[in-house]
Image (cartoon, rainbow, N blue to C red; front, top):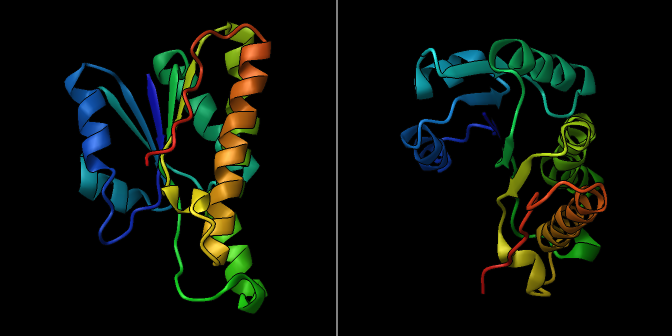
Length: 178
């Protein structure tokens, strides 16, 4: 069972990711802020559970995982695609609002889903986490977005370490494209 977290953007490119897993015969749990947007993008089906959930709300995440447990017996793979982007401001010029937006949409959503899902993976001793983001955080480019992406990359590596320490094989494979 694949859990895909997303924020549907007008140009959202994560549909092919869901399509890849669906073509393999995986059952999908798709999370997004708006159920109507998920329904329009993916439709209903016996192998899909569409859940409206705010990834900043731990209670909603727990409820989504409970629904996945009830319907499919849990989640084996997390594909974390949620994120946001704002361009233009150098780090020292970034407003608090933009800084918080970026860290909420990218780093904090990963932290929150890890808080909700990693204990379940550790208990089962199985699971995989795939995080998808931009490589800009490794560029050293002077922007809040690059700073946030570097934090998200570091958080992905940290989650990998925690899962590996708890004997969950092949849990994550952080890679940074060059």
